[in-house]
Amino acid sequence: MKIATLLLAVTILVAPTTLFSNPPQKDVPAEVTAAQNALKGAYNDLQHAGGDWGGHRVSAMQHIQEALTELNEAEKWAREHHDIK
Image (cartoon, rainbow, N blue to C red; front, top):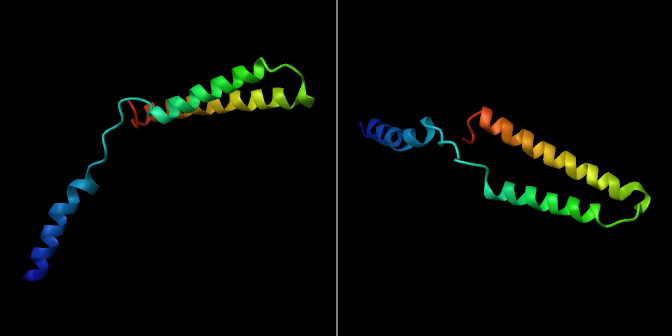
């Protein structure tokens, strides 16, 4: 009898936290927005830095654009999968 009572108590306490998923966030997390802004700032800085730097400056700018594209795709995915509204 004690085991059955214990199992019932555990089920009542654990079920609400495991059966129901967390509600979606209302918007993109502030950290993601901050990262996007930092990437845009870095891109702008590199754009105005001048010089070729052996093609590495332009390559870095392309990588930043790719990172921004990935973040946009991540946001799109999160909206489609109801992780954010």
